[in-house]
View (tube, rainbow, N blue to C red):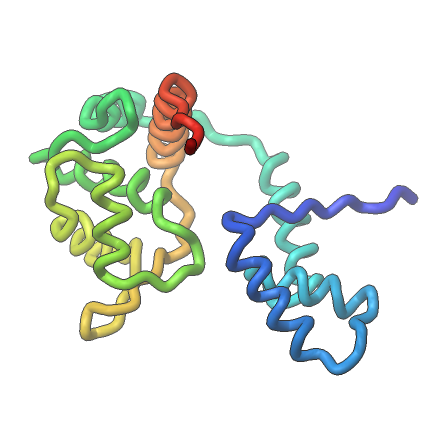
Length: 191
């Protein structure tokens, strides 16, 4: 039987390295192979290696499922028209159905499993919209249950939801625009 390959992808290497170093420093002796795999998994945001492995296997199973093509393409197109070529929301739409769909790419731009202050959420939302009203976006994300927050308005966290088919299509189109924009305007190296 062939050995299962379990890749590990981390969003940001710096917090990963800090979390791993903290765990290694706390141990009194050199960690065993299994202990080290658990430490690496925890640093990546999983409970342990078994959780990482189960998540990977579930992802593979889900990737093999047929995707239904029942999609409101017109709604996706109308919503896509609210975004500029760089994938930023140009204006807050008047129609509620388009507003709700517009929020999914903004939700996807927030980091998963990370607590953020209101200021951090506003900063991230300002990066992906042009009409300078992160408060309406933040409040609507909260009212639709796409983010959670403490009663005092602090410690926002993106809720891990399964976007509807139209939202998944829109997120893919917006992310493609953002990638194209980044590739056409690479940042200059620091001097």
